[in-house]
Length: 393
Figure 1 (cartoon, one colour):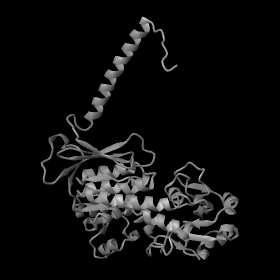
Figure 2: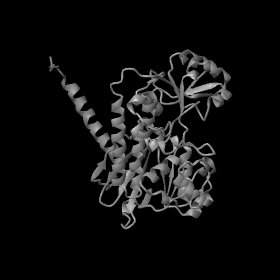
Figure 3: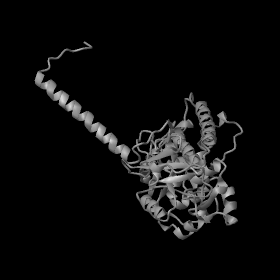
Figure 4: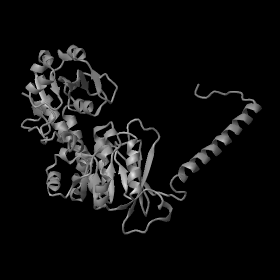
């Protein structure tokens, strides 16, 4: 029966109502405390929803925008940072003076990740970048030109940031990333220097398109949300159209990836960013049953067991030839897939080993997908020229 009638004693009802009212009051207290962390009078007219990204949220009212970054490093739980974006031509709201305020639009920034610089480049604000971490590894021609002209300075890397240089550049904003809780130390130091900073955690997103959606996050600081939205929708649309090309493919090549390092062969987890690209390109990933988003450490014996199944080998470290692969471990020559098709994702790299796959590739997943579809199913994209991948001979 859909409805069941149960006899409930008077004493039970009394307990029930006491519990009910206590719960309501407790919830109101908790809700009030949560609101007090920012502003008791905070009223937002609308939330800007994300399509895929889970790591940030955007709330807007008439005078400012509140951006929240959620769990911005691996292993973080119930950690959130609120940033308040106030236009330069507006007066500062009294209620948020003591919080993380960033005046917009910014005109000079420092990026501590090449991926973030690619996002800035995508919305046409490359000239605003005054400093970067590890400039030797930058691949972008536009950025390399600015570096050679001394318009972009190297500010150090990770725990070796040069705060004197950062301070001398007088940036409107420093965009950092958090591999661990040390990001807090960087933010604290920058705060002491009265330099606004924000965390970009796109690398933690599980979905390929979720990573690109952080373009909207970056655009907020330039007041270019409409431009970012248009670019994102174009990328999303092309990605979906390409994915649809392989939707009905029945025969899928079996894919293996990675390369050994000090005796350990690292392959992408079955739920990782790379695995999703393989699936969406019509490949049958050999570790598809794995539920990890992290790389998996395997010994050569595990790889040998799979070697007879693999049809195509991709992403083999920094190797540019089969000779370089064998210099890592000569036993690879005995693996069956070594004699088959091998493609690496290092077609665009500089003399220091900087790889554009991990720079502009993150914001151009549709172009990576196009490469992979051509590698797995060349008949679907006749005449395509590989961008991020190259064949290893």
